[in-house]
Image 1 (cartoon, rainbow, N blue to C red):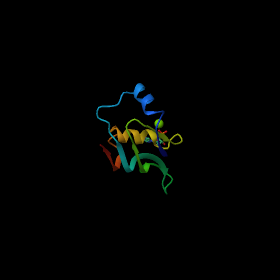
Image 2 (tube, helix red, strand yellow):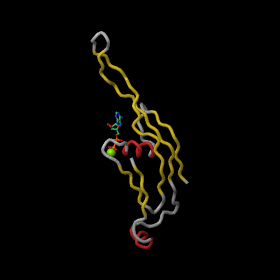
Image 3 (cartoon, helix red, strand yellow):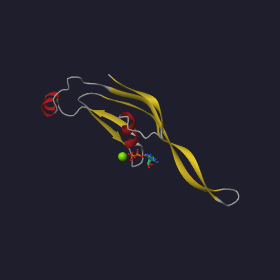
Length: 106
Ligand SMILES: Nc1ncnc2c1ncn2[C@@H]1O[C@H](COP(=O)(O)OP(=O)(O)O)[C@@H](O)[C@H]1O
Ligand SMILES: [Mg+2]
């Protein structure tokens, strides 16, 4: 997954489309990791089908920032973890997941 920041157009053009926020904030995040339990059916040594829960990391060491007045792109193939990262940053992760790392808004 790749995070890119880009200034779109001139500052004046930008302001006419999107008025400047009264409290612009910079969002930064560092080394975000997200792990979820996934149930798998495996065959044990006796040939029986058993359910096992394996913890799988779906966001690995992800860092980046988003500046006010700039467009930030999150790019990656389907399943790369883009939606999961946005859910973590907006505090919408499911309680079954285990999230690590830190983010800051200032
Ligand atoms: N709650 C969940 N339980 C099981 N698998 C999940 C869960 N959330 C995401 N995944 C899996 O994690 C991977 C990343 O998903 P996602 O963040 O939606 O990727 P993207 O938005 O980049 O397509 C996918 O393989 C998805 O199936
Ligand atoms: Mg998605």
